[in-house]
Length: 292
Image 1 (cartoon, rainbow, N blue to C red):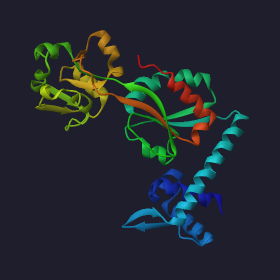
Image 2: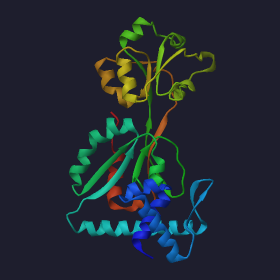
Image 3: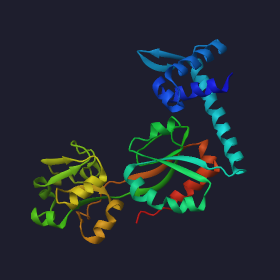
């Protein structure tokens, strides 16, 4: 079997799309099709197919894909060991939820890079990370969503506390002191349906439930924070993102006595990659990061 053809097949099986596979390998789409057809011809097997116009692997393709996962992981491991003998950077593709990446990770990562000068990190900051991990587009991710996969290891980090916030001017102007006062306030959320606020809403006792009449949608946590500072309304954000504003007094926390539901941040990494020395070093560093 030709190794280059296997690499094309492996990448296509990950991306499940000829165009994305071509982009990832920096070749034309026709080159991908040609390599797959040649591999199928050499093996005398059908590896890929379309079912209801959707890409899928045949049974034989699934078997080959699982073998490729092992083969290319071993090649990457050998490459890492060889690079240790040379002055070559090891690359880690790290994914993180946007606000944690911006507020905590990137601000502190230089300490790690100074200690490990032969490790280079590329960052992907977005809120939909797990598929990229499964497709081997990322080496590890930091996420507060719940994921279960037998090939993926979960490493616990910390609980994410939330805070209801508003500017002192907004609180005074709208006389916000009780839960029922929120019905007259503008609510700032990542979504109109208030899914973002569910950890707050689910923590409110039934007798104190409030109907929110006005919602401003801002699809970024930092945007919610700035909107709250500007007295546009009341926001709901991870507490670690507004420690500076709380200290300066530009924001205040509301209903701090309410025990809000919390999320939990974890590192997710494929089990095979979790034994690589570069990844172990980064995991140990991230586990020591402080949110304050």
